[in-house]
Figure 1 (cartoon, rainbow, N blue to C red):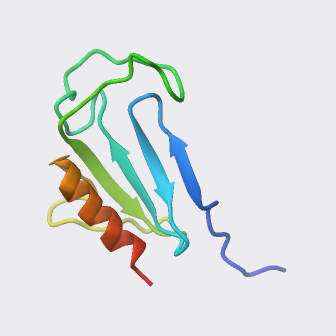
Figure 2 (cartoon, rainbow, N blue to C red):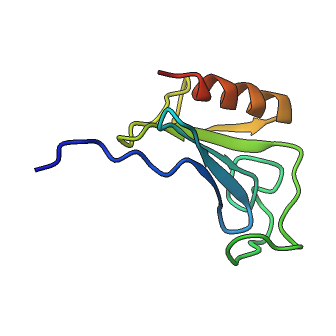
Figure 3 (cartoon, rainbow, N blue to C red):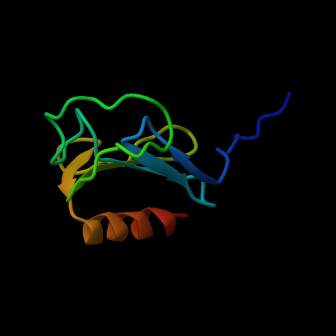
Length: 102
């Protein structure tokens, strides 16, 4: 029996034309979402639908962020497992922090 933890594939993936996820070498995944229903400028907009890149995908000044490790354990913010209305610099800072976890 193999007891090794399966680390998600390192790289990028799109999420229903409203965001993306990136998995780092350390096994942590960051989610950046900025479409209908997410905690961002587009929260109350009509859903675009579809999967992957679309020309009519929403643009936003901010985004909702979250992260989890290879075991599915979520990063905890002060009040929740997601943090909304994050500006680009805040998203970058969060991604760098998650990427540097051991």
